[in-house]
Length: 188
Figure 1: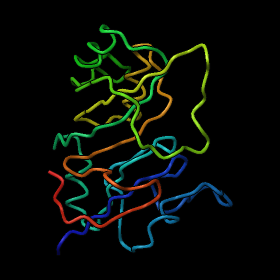
Figure 2 (figure 1 turned 90 degrees about the vertical axis):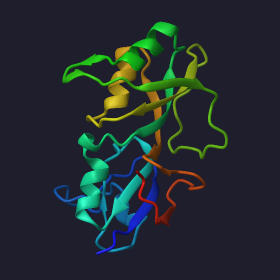
Figure 3 (figure 1 turned 90 degrees about the horizontal axis):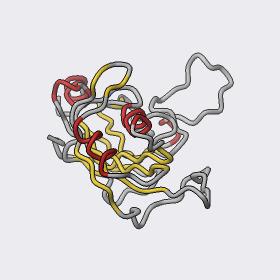
Figure 4 (figure 1 turned 45 degrees about the vertical axis):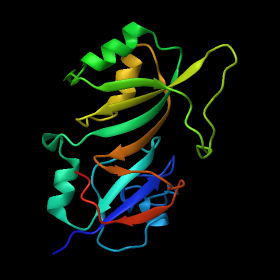
């Protein structure tokens, strides 16, 4: 069987699953509002309050290779943080930080200009005149629960907005929030 792959730009507030079982009557949006193809499952997850690239496939072995940390597939994120990063905070993120579930692996971290263009988020990120914010590009090769958010909080830079821009070679390139496209790439 040939694996089929869908690249979705998951909007903020959407669950990374096709149903919201267990919460009867829930109005929380799921992937079924965006992808009408049958037999696809997300390879990895994005929290409800995170946005960006979600890879879906109909092939179980490929799904495992994409999602499992042992394959060390890099995942890059655009991260808007509250505060101004200093050299010590960036260096700590690059070396790995000690979280409750252990030391994170070293990450690639760069401070960047605000991404442009960037779709609006609903609801918008809170803005405070007295507190600056900054953007980082963080690439990790593991996938702990809420890892990037916990890493930035650990160094005193709470995450305001988190957008996954790539998984391996797969990217968001040209996908607006809520849109998807087929991919024939392997996403090494």
